[in-house]
Image (cartoon, rainbow, N blue to C red; front, side, top):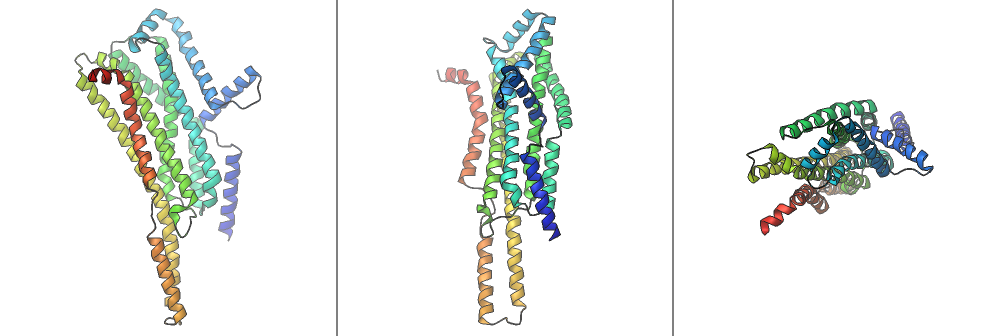
Length: 380
């Protein structure tokens, strides 16, 4: 009884803290800060959309390298940008904003995770250990100090690799390009931080003990909520893969320029490797999600089946074994046992299959769109 009381108190306390917005990521704090600046400038009291805050944050990021480029030779900056992105300066701007947009989208998805657990999942939690595990995950993903260090260190490493690749391609990297690359890389790694913790949640959620519909655990509302949440996560990974693929196809001329003897077949091999890598990641996430959901369902099923077994054994060892009423009760329990045992132990269905196919098609579609001119020329 005391354990149930403690569970109820802990559950309600965690729901209250989620509702009050006590769990905020580094991205939340950054977007909220930009939003407050917008409110002061525009004299509005309405909440600022995170998409608008992200766009303004991107404009701030653009100003920094454009101011610093004045310290060098602006003509060099223009020439090198034209080499990397021939024909238009709009393309690098779109690529930069894509990084900010995917970061904002990842953070919005994380807020949806918080809301789903608050509204649908926590009420079904049956153990304090499950609450402790989820609360530990919340604390870790909202650890702004770790998030900041991860983003800075990872962003600098990623930017160093990009700059090295540009220099190998005989492209002069100016101070403005260097600073801009570092800032955009930091935002990209900030999103990857959220991605890693979402993978961690997908892996650990299979150990959670939840109260499901006894007769058919697979059809429980909470299972539908979790399956939808994890399915959307696979979509988000696929969208991120599509963006990266699109960027790689746009940078194809740079890759080819850096490899003097590069042929079309060599570039095609690189693209094939990229697609295979992303497809493997999407498939791995899909399998992990399905396995976690299956673990939750199986745990609930065996809890019910063990209770039925205990009732059958109790009747079997009673002094009334052999009596008509006792035998009928045992037969009903055994039929009920078989019916529950035969229910599906996963959320794998036609909808899940189509979701996987659509996710796999996104990186391929980005690759085709990025090479649309080559495909049209090939048919001509």
